[in-house]
Length: 183
Image (cartoon, rainbow, N blue to C red; front, side, top):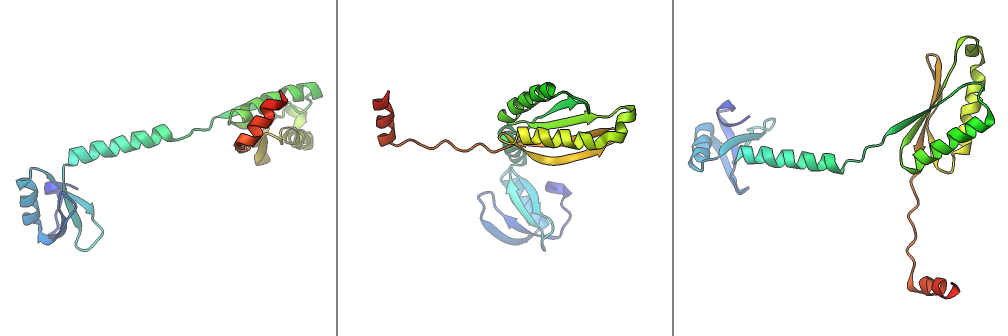
């Protein structure tokens, strides 16, 4: 709430420089803000009396929007890649899908592995669990099971997450010179 939207009788006032001006009537606070050609902004409405600050509200909104944009820019997004298998998949085909999953996990993506059952295959969902567990074991060096195999309608789904990469150790001068001499 700003300026005339504030309806309290008394407010605890903070000046434009951050100094405490004490508890004053709303009219005095508004007059001080008008005198400095700034806005009176309620920053803590739940306290008793509410806390108001004299500031340039449009500048404050601009700074807040700038911080939000910066936070969004720094935010890391993780994509989810999906691999589809069938309940009667051949071992070579599984190996091809494992290589694809390893590439996705190396890139830092999550991997969703889905086996869809059709018709009579719904009676053999146990084979799907076996396939997904073997799949997870093959990619264990690059990823871990984020969500274990679970039936969702006619599909069995498992999520894999990339393992955090180990930080490369810094070489000291002695190991660098030893490596260069051996070449």
